[in-house]
Amino acid sequence: MYSRALSFLCLASAITNADAFVSPASSSATTFGRDLSLNLFGIAKTAYKVKQGVDRIGKDNEGNVIRIPVKDIQRDWSFEDYEAEGEFSADVFVPADGQIKGCAFFMHGFSQYPVAYYETLIESVEASGVAIIAVETGLTSKGVLGESMKAKLKRVSPQFVLQRAVSEDTKQCIRMLKEGSDAFADLGITKNAVGNKIAVMGHSMGGGLSFPVAADCGVDYAFTMAPAFGEEKFDPIAEGIDRRTPKESMLLAGGWDLIARAKKVKEISVEANKAKPNSSILVNIKRGLHTGFEDEVVLFSVPFDSILKGAGLGGKIFGFADNALFSALKFLKFARKQTGQIAGSTILMSYFLTAMASGKNLNPEAAEQYLDENIAERFEDKFDITYGSDN
Image 1: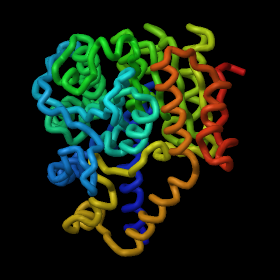
Image 2: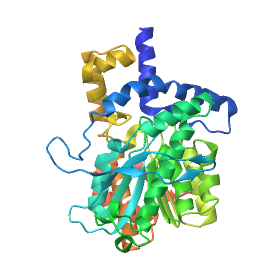
Image 3: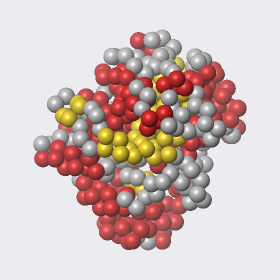
Image 4: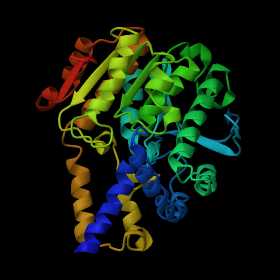
């Protein structure tokens, strides 16, 4: 019984990685989180081989194009005394009619990849006409994994290495768009088509990074789901809001989120509204969970149930693999989509991007109306939409 319970704890850590988002303000908590995140290396190295087998041509099982992979982008950035090397890839989502009305740059959570959010991103693109670019930079990416192992010897957190890579790769993509790179222009995502209709978006780690990235790149729009505080160098308030507050922002917070707690998410929105009154909308989701913003629970870039079933990998990593667990995972996958959290989050993302593309100011009343018109009636009261304030 104890070994099974321990296995489930390992599983929960891998899926949510709660330790990766401990506030730097607590030194003892930070050390604890850092030690646990270092232990992910064993899983990361094993899962890396599985990752190579994932579909990289951008189609689902029925052959429908769901994304356009842009590969082999040479890194061209530096961070303090670190010079980036190697290449990275990005997933590009464009509306089916090819009419580009803007562009958003999405950043995933710590142990995730863009695949965890495909449905949300695709639906938002089609609803708004805004293209979305999401870097495929994660823990098991060749460059990140190698740099993290080197950093481990210097007692530098893999979280820092990943936050640096995801944010800087995203910033490079924003520069590429503004400079007219063929990599995106060939897909219709041009400076002329997009103009100043550019947004930064993210979940968890990626949500927290959205504000520093927006500040560095002069982006006026930020949409985040459960934005998490991580390493001090990437603090969403000190390195984001305090340096340059977005013109418009919307922050979603889950009431039952134990990683990016609603109180901490509120702090970001409150500070944004202090700097620019009525610029930041806060959405509190009743009984909302941290992983409730993900379409698919994945371990790195692979759906978790696929990992467990693939070549007995579940037994090798976690020490168990039985039908009861697979059945439980299937049920949880189904049940988590019946709460309204994913549906409502997708609708609010669509509202945010649509408003940006049309040049309209965001406000809680319009957001609530858009939500009510598009979500099942039984979920309407799940979302509390206001301007973030100390009241």
